[in-house]
Length: 220
Image (cartoon, rainbow, N blue to C red; front, side, top):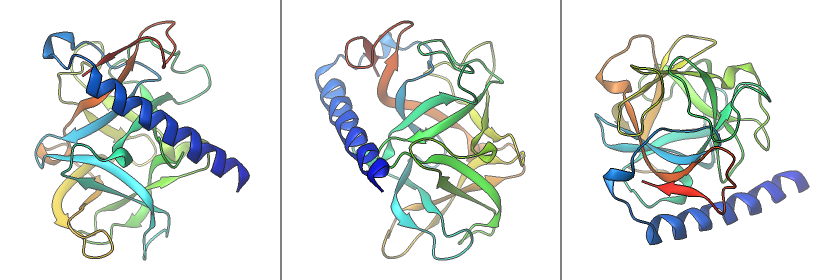
């Protein structure tokens, strides 16, 4: 519990830094470049216009793990995710993420990784997507391959995330929850690539090679 508490405090401080940086920085599209390892960002589903989101609310069915949803609000601090490698040396800080590279997406405020497994999702009966682990440490079901065209993940481009272990794509199809997360959209895994599983990098801090998060970054 102590480790989780420290992680929560660190996450809250990082989100405060993000909010201040994004509000004070130049958000010009001209600054767009590549998504890099170690960056912290929000991801927008381009079809349904919701951002990937999580929070300390568990599913009432399926795995019972922390729920992952989509939200329409652009300013919710619970929508920040950190890009990390599949191993300690798999994603050196500040290097561009390659198309076809496996990454972990770690929820900043709770320290849990984007995860999926063979449980049905609560609303659509697709594959459940959850947040799993402690302080960024989970298991091999936290790995997602970035599917994009070209050599690297471009911040202006739409990409897909395909789960390494089960091959499903991170998706939204429009189903919405009731209380206690009324209006939030179900996020789940789908077997096929289609319009429901394209995502784009949005607000965040994008780490440059050799840079420290608090001192050198670009805002989108």
